Image (cartoon, rainbow, N blue to C red):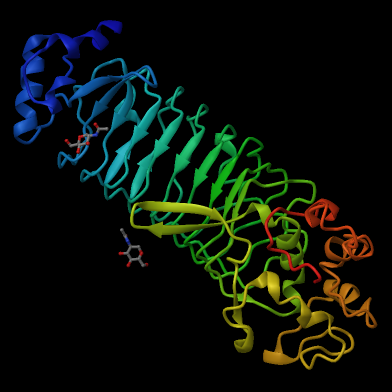
Length: 393
Ligand SMILES: *[C@@H]1O[C@H](CO)[C@@H](O)[C@H](O)[C@H]1NC(C)=O
Ligand SMILES: *[C@@H]1O[C@H](CO)[C@@H](O)[C@H](O)[C@H]1NC(C)=O
């Protein structure tokens, strides 16, 4: 098995693409493999393979060969199998039973409508199924070691409660670019080790309050959906995220958004945006990236900035009891206490703790000798280094 790694160097001539060619059993097969690069690879012929030195696994590349069935003749010690950009419409894990070391399987860019997982793949850690035609989540039994599951750009429209119960070791789950409109509260139940959850570019209109309960995510993608608000208590209270993506949703900036706005203010260093640049995707901190879509006069305004709306006593949008009348949107009763609470205070309740408390006002009293001391020293540590949260002048 380990001998596989020594082949590439010993086969001197050939193009760069062929240098890494690896013969699983005999020189004849190696020759076949060399020939196969020029023409189409028929069923039963080996795909080019090489030792992946970083992952220390034999990587077999059957990508882009027009395959409609999984090749039979694959090296027994295959650790990484690339089958992307083929014409596979239906695959069963039974096709990989003769590959006991298989740890990564890339089936992206096929036309998969079905993945049968009856036969277990006990060591499989990564399963890449993006850019296929899956309309339902495959059953995920028999994959106990799976840590990374990528289902991006399929046509999945529904997840059942406990959908990922069988793959409790997942650390990364990518559902970007599917047709999800709603999710059950228990969709991600049991994924205590999940770090990265991508739900962006779906059609999510609302999310249940307890969706993230029990999770300890580093990264959450909700960008590119149809979300107008998030329920109060949606984000686990004690938890700090590294990256949260909320842009490209039609946020409805009325008092029902007070919870989300307060959360953004408190977590502004975690709010990120992904931007397409000429040299690739750029990710950067941008607490202003979640933007109001409605009502019309707030259209385009950052969610983080519309805080005055609900607090101003004389605001025409707001009844005494905090009920919005515009567009007939009633405010959930949970927000009533926070909005009715300070009828005399002009400061918005959501940001009050973070902005008022900062004793910036003492600075002027000591400003007389301020030429000696930089004013920044007198400034207490505010919530974030970014000047995102509006501080009183
Ligand atoms: C796998 O093979 C395809 C087609 O020959 C090629 O385009 C691709 O770069 C290869 N991938 C890797 C990781 O070697
Ligand atoms: C996915 O669904 C969309 C809309 O329902 C449809 O237009 C598209 O053809 C589907 N894609 C595949 C690969 O089945």
